[in-house]
Structures are given as C-alpha cells and as structure tokens.
Length: 169
Image 1 (cartoon, rainbow, N blue to C red):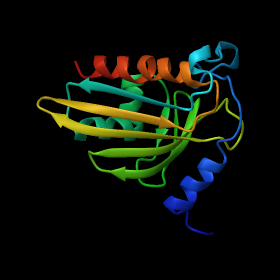
Image 2: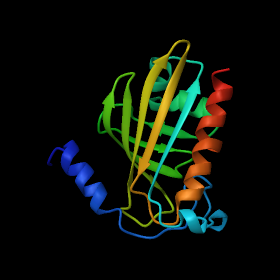
Image 3: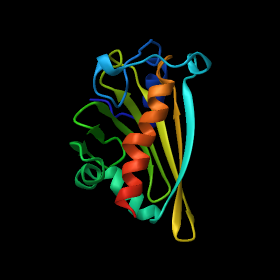
Image 4: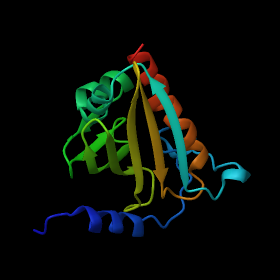
C-alpha cells in the first residue's frame, strides 16, 4: 500500500472539488439546506477570525481530541489527531483527514460534509496566534462546492465559535 503524502493528497482533494451541492454542511440534513444568497452564490472560500480566552496549545488540543471536541460541540466526534489521521465530527456529518499539523500553531484538514457528492473535499486551515491572554484563530475554508457559502459561513459561527466561547469563558 502506498503511503499517502501531503502534496498528492492535497492535489487529489483539490481535483475532487468539482461538483455542486446545496447541502448544509453542519445542519446534518439535506432538507435544511438553502442555496447561498445571490452575492455569495459562486463563492467557494471564506475567512473568519475570532479571539478566545485560551492558549494556542489548549485550542489545538480541543480541535484534535475526540473527547474534548465532543465536550464543546455536544456532538459525537472520532478524531485521530496525528498527521494523516481521519476524523468524523458532529455525528459523522463532517468527515476528513488531517493534512498538516504544526503543534499549537496550525491545523490543515481535508474536510467534507457527508451530504456533498462522494469524493468532494474542501480545505480547512486554522491558524493560532497568541495575543496576551487570548488566542486569535484565523480560519480559511477553501474549495467547497458552489452554493455552500452561506450555510458554511453561519455554520462555523453556530457550531464552532459560539460553543467555543462558552467552553472558554
């Protein structure tokens, strides 16, 4: 069996991004999906930043540990927190693989909604920067299907940022 290397994996994931889906990535139900609004209909990337009262090491651990992820999200998670490790989060509604891990600095994942066409992956990148008693998380989510922008944009807030703010008061 050939070892999966980062560059071919990213290239393969990028090639497989062709496809259209209006399935809400984090809503868990195709019936809950709504196509993106007209201004966002063709957008396939997004950027968000949030400051949390924690450390880069702590947020890095929470995002890569099944028990800690489930504790903040209140959803089932199976996360193998090593490079190349797979993950299944939010009760298997989000699936993927860790592409690059730089402890306490960066997480890059090939990430997909279970509702997207088979083989369709996007790239999610979390960068952590310490700022005094807080950490700034910069999220870049790229290569997702056309029409998914609005649900992903709001999904990051409702399924990650809001629960994490409660988890790190």
